[in-house]
Length: 396
Image (spheres, rainbow, N blue to C red):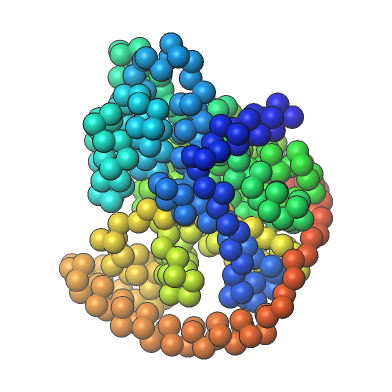
Protein backbone atom coordinates (compact mmCIF):
# COMPACT_ATOMS: atom_id res chain seq x y z
CA UNK A 1 0.00 0.00 0.00
CA UNK A 2 2.94 2.32 0.68
CA UNK A 3 4.15 1.98 -2.91
CA UNK A 4 0.62 2.57 -4.19
CA UNK A 5 0.53 5.90 -2.35
CA UNK A 6 3.99 6.73 -3.70
CA UNK A 7 2.74 6.08 -7.26
CA UNK A 8 -0.23 8.38 -6.73
CA UNK A 9 2.05 11.06 -5.31
CA UNK A 10 4.36 10.62 -8.29
CA UNK A 11 1.43 11.12 -10.64
CA UNK A 12 0.70 14.49 -9.04
CA UNK A 13 4.37 15.46 -9.25
CA UNK A 14 4.52 14.48 -12.93
CA UNK A 15 1.34 16.34 -13.89
CA UNK A 16 2.10 18.66 -16.79
CA UNK A 17 5.54 17.07 -17.27
CA UNK A 18 4.77 13.67 -18.79
CA UNK A 19 2.05 12.68 -21.23
CA UNK A 20 -0.82 10.41 -20.28
CA UNK A 21 -0.11 8.04 -23.14
CA UNK A 22 -2.94 6.27 -25.00
CA UNK A 23 -3.95 2.64 -24.99
CA UNK A 24 -4.03 1.96 -28.72
CA UNK A 25 -6.19 -0.99 -29.83
CA UNK A 26 -4.56 -3.31 -32.35
CA UNK A 27 -7.11 -5.10 -34.52
CA UNK A 28 -4.30 -7.06 -36.18
CA UNK A 29 -2.93 -8.48 -32.93
CA UNK A 30 -6.39 -8.90 -31.44
CA UNK A 31 -7.48 -11.07 -34.35
CA UNK A 32 -4.21 -12.98 -34.40
CA UNK A 33 -4.41 -13.94 -30.72
CA UNK A 34 -8.17 -14.00 -30.21
CA UNK A 35 -7.92 -11.34 -27.53
CA UNK A 36 -8.48 -7.62 -27.10
CA UNK A 37 -4.90 -6.36 -27.42
CA UNK A 38 -4.12 -2.79 -26.40
CA UNK A 39 -0.72 -1.13 -26.78
CA UNK A 40 0.38 1.35 -24.11
CA UNK A 41 2.26 3.92 -26.21
CA UNK A 42 5.10 5.11 -23.98
CA UNK A 43 7.07 5.92 -27.13
CA UNK A 44 4.86 9.02 -27.35
CA UNK A 45 6.52 10.72 -24.37
CA UNK A 46 8.68 13.79 -25.03
CA UNK A 47 11.78 11.63 -24.58
CA UNK A 48 10.14 8.73 -26.47
CA UNK A 49 10.15 6.37 -23.50
CA UNK A 50 8.67 5.78 -20.05
CA UNK A 51 12.00 6.60 -18.39
CA UNK A 52 11.12 10.27 -17.98
CA UNK A 53 8.61 9.25 -15.31
CA UNK A 54 11.05 7.70 -12.85
CA UNK A 55 13.92 10.08 -13.54
CA UNK A 56 11.85 13.23 -13.11
CA UNK A 57 10.04 11.90 -10.06
CA UNK A 58 13.33 11.09 -8.34
CA UNK A 59 15.03 14.42 -9.12
CA UNK A 60 11.95 16.54 -8.42
CA UNK A 61 11.61 14.90 -5.00
CA UNK A 62 15.11 16.02 -3.92
CA UNK A 63 15.38 18.51 -1.08
CA UNK A 64 16.65 22.04 -1.72
CA UNK A 65 19.98 21.04 -0.16
CA UNK A 66 20.35 17.94 -2.32
CA UNK A 67 19.55 19.93 -5.46
CA UNK A 68 22.77 21.88 -4.91
CA UNK A 69 24.75 18.65 -5.27
CA UNK A 70 25.60 17.25 -8.72
CA UNK A 71 23.16 14.74 -10.17
CA UNK A 72 24.82 11.61 -11.56
CA UNK A 73 23.38 8.68 -13.49
CA UNK A 74 24.30 5.77 -15.74
CA UNK A 75 22.14 4.77 -18.65
CA UNK A 76 22.02 2.94 -21.97
CA UNK A 77 20.08 5.88 -23.36
CA UNK A 78 16.46 6.32 -22.29
CA UNK A 79 17.02 6.95 -18.58
CA UNK A 80 19.75 9.41 -19.58
CA UNK A 81 17.22 11.36 -21.63
CA UNK A 82 14.83 11.48 -18.70
CA UNK A 83 17.57 12.70 -16.37
CA UNK A 84 18.74 15.28 -18.91
CA UNK A 85 15.18 16.53 -19.35
CA UNK A 86 14.68 16.81 -15.57
CA UNK A 87 18.03 18.58 -15.03
CA UNK A 88 17.24 21.15 -17.72
CA UNK A 89 13.69 21.69 -16.47
CA UNK A 90 14.71 22.01 -12.81
CA UNK A 91 18.01 23.86 -13.57
CA UNK A 92 20.23 21.26 -11.90
CA UNK A 93 23.65 20.25 -13.22
CA UNK A 94 24.12 16.60 -14.09
CA UNK A 95 26.77 14.16 -15.31
CA UNK A 96 25.56 11.19 -17.33
CA UNK A 97 27.61 8.05 -17.96
CA UNK A 98 26.64 6.02 -21.03
CA UNK A 99 28.21 2.85 -22.46
CA UNK A 100 30.17 3.29 -25.67
CA UNK A 101 27.74 0.94 -27.46
CA UNK A 102 24.88 3.42 -27.02
CA UNK A 103 23.27 4.24 -30.38
CA UNK A 104 24.26 7.68 -31.67
CA UNK A 105 20.62 8.72 -31.86
CA UNK A 106 20.21 8.30 -28.09
CA UNK A 107 23.40 10.24 -27.31
CA UNK A 108 22.28 13.12 -29.50
CA UNK A 109 18.87 13.15 -27.81
CA UNK A 110 20.53 13.40 -24.38
CA UNK A 111 22.57 16.35 -25.64
CA UNK A 112 19.39 17.94 -26.97
CA UNK A 113 17.44 17.64 -23.72
CA UNK A 114 20.27 18.45 -21.32
CA UNK A 115 21.90 21.36 -23.12
CA UNK A 116 24.69 23.06 -21.17
CA UNK A 117 23.47 21.66 -17.85
CA UNK A 118 24.48 18.07 -18.61
CA UNK A 119 27.87 16.48 -19.31
CA UNK A 120 27.96 13.12 -21.13
CA UNK A 121 30.75 10.59 -20.52
CA UNK A 122 31.00 7.44 -22.66
CA UNK A 123 32.49 4.62 -20.57
CA UNK A 124 32.57 0.83 -20.94
CA UNK A 125 30.80 -1.58 -23.25
CA UNK A 126 27.66 -2.22 -21.19
CA UNK A 127 25.31 -0.46 -18.79
CA UNK A 128 26.94 -2.21 -15.85
CA UNK A 129 30.42 -0.90 -16.71
CA UNK A 130 29.06 2.62 -17.18
CA UNK A 131 27.18 2.31 -13.88
CA UNK A 132 30.33 1.32 -11.99
CA UNK A 133 32.16 4.38 -13.33
CA UNK A 134 29.18 6.60 -12.47
CA UNK A 135 29.04 5.30 -8.90
CA UNK A 136 32.75 5.98 -8.40
CA UNK A 137 32.39 9.50 -9.78
CA UNK A 138 29.35 10.13 -7.61
CA UNK A 139 31.23 9.10 -4.47
CA UNK A 140 34.16 11.36 -5.37
CA UNK A 141 31.95 14.38 -6.07
CA UNK A 142 29.45 13.69 -3.27
CA UNK A 143 26.70 13.72 -5.85
CA UNK A 144 23.16 12.34 -5.95
CA UNK A 145 22.97 9.08 -7.88
CA UNK A 146 19.73 8.73 -9.84
CA UNK A 147 19.39 4.99 -10.28
CA UNK A 148 17.57 3.89 -13.45
CA UNK A 149 15.60 1.17 -11.67
CA UNK A 150 16.59 0.20 -8.11
CA UNK A 151 15.25 3.22 -6.25
CA UNK A 152 11.82 3.68 -4.59
CA UNK A 153 11.18 7.07 -6.23
CA UNK A 154 12.23 5.79 -9.65
CA UNK A 155 9.97 2.75 -9.26
CA UNK A 156 7.06 4.93 -8.12
CA UNK A 157 7.49 7.15 -11.17
CA UNK A 158 7.47 4.13 -13.50
CA UNK A 159 4.48 2.80 -11.60
CA UNK A 160 2.36 5.67 -12.94
CA UNK A 161 2.22 3.66 -16.19
CA UNK A 162 0.29 1.04 -14.23
CA UNK A 163 -2.05 3.63 -12.73
CA UNK A 164 -2.85 4.98 -16.20
CA UNK A 165 -3.60 1.46 -17.42
CA UNK A 166 -5.90 0.87 -14.43
CA UNK A 167 -7.70 4.19 -14.87
CA UNK A 168 -8.11 3.87 -18.64
CA UNK A 169 -9.56 0.36 -18.42
CA UNK A 170 -11.45 1.03 -15.17
CA UNK A 171 -9.63 -1.96 -13.78
CA UNK A 172 -11.06 -4.27 -16.45
CA UNK A 173 -7.77 -5.66 -17.69
CA UNK A 174 -6.86 -9.32 -17.38
CA UNK A 175 -3.22 -9.48 -18.51
CA UNK A 176 -0.47 -6.87 -18.66
CA UNK A 177 2.80 -7.68 -20.43
CA UNK A 178 5.70 -5.46 -19.48
CA UNK A 179 9.37 -5.44 -20.58
CA UNK A 180 12.10 -6.03 -18.02
CA UNK A 181 15.63 -4.66 -18.04
CA UNK A 182 16.60 -3.80 -14.48
CA UNK A 183 13.00 -4.24 -13.34
CA UNK A 184 11.94 -0.70 -12.44
CA UNK A 185 9.00 -0.53 -14.84
CA UNK A 186 7.83 -4.08 -14.18
CA UNK A 187 8.01 -3.78 -10.40
CA UNK A 188 6.24 -0.41 -10.34
CA UNK A 189 3.48 -1.41 -12.75
CA UNK A 190 2.96 -4.84 -11.20
CA UNK A 191 2.90 -3.55 -7.63
CA UNK A 192 0.28 -0.92 -8.38
CA UNK A 193 -1.97 -3.11 -10.52
CA UNK A 194 -1.88 -6.10 -8.16
CA UNK A 195 -2.81 -3.84 -5.26
CA UNK A 196 -5.80 -2.49 -7.20
CA UNK A 197 -6.80 -5.77 -8.83
CA UNK A 198 -5.26 -8.95 -7.37
CA UNK A 199 -6.67 -11.07 -10.21
CA UNK A 200 -4.70 -9.29 -12.94
CA UNK A 201 -1.90 -11.38 -14.45
CA UNK A 202 1.46 -9.65 -14.94
CA UNK A 203 3.90 -11.17 -17.45
CA UNK A 204 7.45 -9.91 -17.75
CA UNK A 205 9.41 -10.09 -21.01
CA UNK A 206 13.20 -10.21 -21.25
CA UNK A 207 15.55 -10.56 -24.23
CA UNK A 208 17.25 -13.95 -24.58
CA UNK A 209 20.64 -12.24 -24.59
CA UNK A 210 20.24 -10.72 -21.12
CA UNK A 211 17.71 -12.67 -19.02
CA UNK A 212 18.89 -11.34 -15.66
CA UNK A 213 15.46 -11.24 -13.96
CA UNK A 214 14.50 -14.65 -15.33
CA UNK A 215 17.69 -16.21 -13.97
CA UNK A 216 17.34 -14.42 -10.64
CA UNK A 217 13.77 -15.60 -10.14
CA UNK A 218 14.77 -19.09 -11.20
CA UNK A 219 17.50 -19.23 -8.55
CA UNK A 220 15.56 -17.33 -5.91
CA UNK A 221 18.21 -14.64 -5.52
CA UNK A 222 19.73 -11.77 -7.50
CA UNK A 223 22.37 -13.19 -9.81
CA UNK A 224 24.94 -11.58 -12.09
CA UNK A 225 24.95 -12.89 -15.66
CA UNK A 226 28.28 -14.30 -16.83
CA UNK A 227 27.47 -13.47 -20.46
CA UNK A 228 25.58 -10.46 -21.78
CA UNK A 229 24.41 -9.67 -25.30
CA UNK A 230 23.63 -5.99 -25.78
CA UNK A 231 21.58 -5.93 -28.99
CA UNK A 232 18.46 -5.07 -26.97
CA UNK A 233 20.40 -2.23 -25.38
CA UNK A 234 17.48 -0.76 -23.44
CA UNK A 235 17.07 -4.01 -21.49
CA UNK A 236 20.65 -5.30 -21.43
CA UNK A 237 21.36 -5.44 -17.70
CA UNK A 238 23.80 -7.93 -16.20
CA UNK A 239 22.29 -7.66 -12.70
CA UNK A 240 18.79 -6.54 -11.71
CA UNK A 241 18.08 -4.48 -8.61
CA UNK A 242 17.61 -5.94 -5.14
CA UNK A 243 14.40 -3.97 -4.63
CA UNK A 244 13.04 -4.64 -8.11
CA UNK A 245 13.80 -8.35 -7.71
CA UNK A 246 11.75 -8.58 -4.51
CA UNK A 247 8.82 -6.68 -6.02
CA UNK A 248 8.86 -8.75 -9.21
CA UNK A 249 9.10 -11.98 -7.22
CA UNK A 250 6.04 -10.90 -5.28
CA UNK A 251 3.88 -9.48 -8.07
CA UNK A 252 5.01 -10.72 -11.51
CA UNK A 253 3.34 -14.00 -12.47
CA UNK A 254 6.06 -15.18 -14.82
CA UNK A 255 8.89 -13.97 -17.01
CA UNK A 256 9.29 -15.12 -20.62
CA UNK A 257 12.54 -14.96 -22.54
CA UNK A 258 12.18 -13.63 -26.09
CA UNK A 259 14.63 -14.36 -28.94
CA UNK A 260 16.22 -11.24 -30.44
CA UNK A 261 15.17 -12.34 -33.94
CA UNK A 262 11.52 -12.39 -32.94
CA UNK A 263 11.89 -8.92 -31.43
CA UNK A 264 13.25 -7.69 -34.77
CA UNK A 265 10.33 -9.26 -36.62
CA UNK A 266 7.93 -7.52 -34.25
CA UNK A 267 9.65 -4.17 -34.84
CA UNK A 268 9.25 -4.51 -38.60
CA UNK A 269 5.63 -5.67 -38.36
CA UNK A 270 4.75 -2.75 -36.06
CA UNK A 271 6.28 -0.32 -38.54
CA UNK A 272 4.67 -1.86 -41.61
CA UNK A 273 1.21 -2.42 -40.13
CA UNK A 274 0.71 0.23 -37.44
CA UNK A 275 3.31 2.78 -38.50
CA UNK A 276 4.95 2.54 -35.06
CA UNK A 277 8.71 3.02 -34.75
CA UNK A 278 9.99 1.16 -31.72
CA UNK A 279 13.38 0.26 -30.32
CA UNK A 280 14.22 -3.38 -29.56
CA UNK A 281 13.37 -3.09 -25.85
CA UNK A 282 10.15 -1.31 -26.76
CA UNK A 283 8.97 -4.28 -28.82
CA UNK A 284 9.62 -6.84 -26.08
CA UNK A 285 6.11 -6.98 -24.63
CA UNK A 286 4.43 -7.40 -28.02
CA UNK A 287 6.98 -10.05 -28.99
CA UNK A 288 5.99 -11.96 -25.84
CA UNK A 289 2.37 -12.31 -26.97
CA UNK A 290 3.35 -15.52 -28.74
CA UNK A 291 4.44 -17.07 -25.44
CA UNK A 292 1.21 -15.98 -23.74
CA UNK A 293 -1.13 -17.01 -26.57
CA UNK A 294 -2.69 -19.88 -24.66
CA UNK A 295 -3.70 -17.81 -21.65
CA UNK A 296 -4.97 -14.58 -23.23
CA UNK A 297 -7.76 -15.77 -25.52
CA UNK A 298 -10.94 -13.78 -24.96
CA UNK A 299 -9.21 -11.45 -22.51
CA UNK A 300 -8.18 -7.80 -22.47
CA UNK A 301 -4.40 -7.61 -22.73
CA UNK A 302 -2.19 -4.53 -22.42
CA UNK A 303 1.32 -4.58 -23.88
CA UNK A 304 3.57 -1.78 -22.64
CA UNK A 305 5.53 -0.42 -25.60
CA UNK A 306 8.27 1.12 -23.52
CA UNK A 307 10.27 3.22 -26.00
CA UNK A 308 10.81 4.35 -29.57
CA UNK A 309 14.41 5.57 -29.62
CA UNK A 310 15.89 3.55 -32.45
CA UNK A 311 18.81 4.60 -34.63
CA UNK A 312 17.93 4.31 -38.33
CA UNK A 313 21.41 2.88 -38.97
CA UNK A 314 20.40 -0.25 -37.06
CA UNK A 315 17.64 -1.28 -39.48
CA UNK A 316 19.81 -3.37 -41.84
CA UNK A 317 20.88 -5.50 -38.87
CA UNK A 318 17.31 -5.62 -37.56
CA UNK A 319 16.00 -6.88 -40.91
CA UNK A 320 18.77 -9.44 -41.21
CA UNK A 321 18.21 -10.77 -37.69
CA UNK A 322 14.50 -11.06 -38.41
CA UNK A 323 15.10 -13.01 -41.59
CA UNK A 324 17.55 -15.37 -39.90
CA UNK A 325 15.01 -15.98 -37.12
CA UNK A 326 12.35 -16.82 -39.67
CA UNK A 327 14.70 -19.13 -41.54
CA UNK A 328 14.53 -16.96 -44.66
CA UNK A 329 18.18 -15.97 -44.75
CA UNK A 330 20.94 -18.15 -46.19
CA UNK A 331 23.84 -19.30 -44.05
CA UNK A 332 26.32 -17.78 -46.47
CA UNK A 333 26.09 -14.47 -44.64
CA UNK A 334 28.10 -15.95 -41.76
CA UNK A 335 30.93 -17.07 -44.03
CA UNK A 336 31.39 -13.94 -46.14
CA UNK A 337 31.31 -10.32 -44.95
CA UNK A 338 28.41 -8.21 -46.18
CA UNK A 339 28.05 -4.47 -46.15
CA UNK A 340 25.09 -2.76 -44.43
CA UNK A 341 23.91 -1.56 -47.82
CA UNK A 342 23.79 -5.09 -49.26
CA UNK A 343 22.00 -6.38 -46.17
CA UNK A 344 19.45 -3.59 -46.44
CA UNK A 345 18.87 -4.26 -50.13
CA UNK A 346 18.48 -8.02 -49.67
CA UNK A 347 16.31 -7.69 -46.58
CA UNK A 348 14.08 -5.03 -48.09
CA UNK A 349 13.35 -7.14 -51.16
CA UNK A 350 12.47 -10.19 -49.04
CA UNK A 351 10.35 -8.17 -46.66
CA UNK A 352 8.66 -6.52 -49.61
CA UNK A 353 7.44 -9.92 -50.85
CA UNK A 354 6.39 -10.94 -47.35
CA UNK A 355 4.50 -7.70 -46.75
CA UNK A 356 2.19 -8.25 -49.71
CA UNK A 357 0.67 -11.36 -48.19
CA UNK A 358 0.74 -9.90 -44.67
CA UNK A 359 -1.13 -6.80 -45.73
CA UNK A 360 -4.02 -8.72 -47.28
CA UNK A 361 -4.11 -11.11 -44.33
CA UNK A 362 -4.15 -8.22 -41.86
CA UNK A 363 -6.93 -6.55 -43.83
CA UNK A 364 -9.06 -9.71 -43.61
CA UNK A 365 -8.37 -10.02 -39.89
CA UNK A 366 -9.37 -6.39 -39.31
CA UNK A 367 -12.64 -6.93 -41.16
CA UNK A 368 -13.46 -9.99 -39.08
CA UNK A 369 -12.50 -8.28 -35.83
CA UNK A 370 -14.61 -5.14 -36.35
CA UNK A 371 -16.80 -4.39 -33.38
CA UNK A 372 -14.73 -6.37 -30.89
CA UNK A 373 -15.45 -5.19 -27.36
CA UNK A 374 -13.34 -5.16 -24.26
CA UNK A 375 -13.78 -8.12 -21.98
CA UNK A 376 -12.53 -8.69 -18.48
CA UNK A 377 -11.52 -12.04 -17.07
CA UNK A 378 -9.83 -12.93 -13.80
CA UNK A 379 -6.82 -15.16 -13.49
CA UNK A 380 -5.67 -17.29 -10.57
CA UNK A 381 -2.92 -15.86 -8.38
CA UNK A 382 0.12 -18.13 -8.43
CA UNK A 383 2.73 -18.64 -5.72
CA UNK A 384 5.65 -20.90 -6.55
CA UNK A 385 8.33 -20.79 -9.24
CA UNK A 386 8.83 -24.06 -11.17
CA UNK A 387 10.46 -24.11 -14.58
CA UNK A 388 8.31 -23.82 -17.70
CA UNK A 389 9.16 -24.05 -21.37
CA UNK A 390 8.79 -20.38 -22.27
CA UNK A 391 10.04 -18.60 -19.17
CA UNK A 392 9.75 -18.61 -15.41
CA UNK A 393 6.25 -19.30 -14.13
CA UNK A 394 4.36 -19.37 -10.88
CA UNK A 395 2.19 -22.47 -10.77
CA UNK A 396 -0.87 -22.72 -8.61
